Image (cartoon, rainbow, N blue to C red):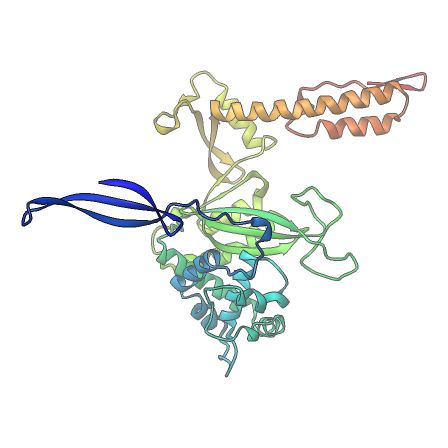
Length: 405
């Protein structure tokens, strides 16, 4: 087969030709097919392109598919127990529409109708004009806390069964989000607290999540005031957690339930509550905890630390079973070369930054541009990260009214 170009009517075309033998006439003949114009394709001038309109497809479609798999609208409608309106969306349809909007294009609920109009997948076979912020708040005012809790548990049960999630091991963690609510605006949820963003001028809203071991899918959540504590939030989740396992038909041993959390969520009362509820717990203790000191002393003994092996490679661990307060606990000290390298990189980066700040303070001290109290405060601030204050020695002195660093 040959491919060649031919000019026809002033335009160049690309043609494919094949030589075939004719057994009747006892001679070859050629078959030809026009492949199309051979001229270079026209180039689009992007400067002259203008957007006529856009439609969301993928992100909205994926969320709507998940909602259909869980039968989300029906679960919310049944849990809230509100009769369907003669016309307009139900509370389940309204909640789904707002959730999809907040996940794909966060904005005020007054833009909800315009957002739904811009989507190819539909959350409901209803005119988008019925999805308004006023309608959402009307529905929300009719729902009680108990109904919301029931809806949350039913949705979690549907997710566990449909996507085969494990609820035996749950991870608990908290975070918070900045708000830009005016200080003079009253509110119970947005409060000043320890913001993750390190900003102290904004009020924050806290969010606690219990996620499954498989897929890290959130099964339960709590919103709480920005000045609340992690321990108090977890205590409030224990009752709902028990309801969730009962809803899942958990008839196995209660000790199979394990809760994983970080060291900031520890208290003696919370440990007792978890033990009473029948939950095992896995927690990373802070170094200042007496049990952590006891475990480190045990790991420092000859032969106490051994290689774990398997997939963990060079990881070594020491294990000690003892009583922590009134409870029987197993303490594990882990020594990981990979984790150590990461910690060293973090300490080195923090040390470089601290040295630059200390050099600036030293120059200011030499020039007499800083008072001793302010200098000591700035030094403590520069060394507060990555345990620098434990091994960086700084001496502040004052002679003849002149400060030195």
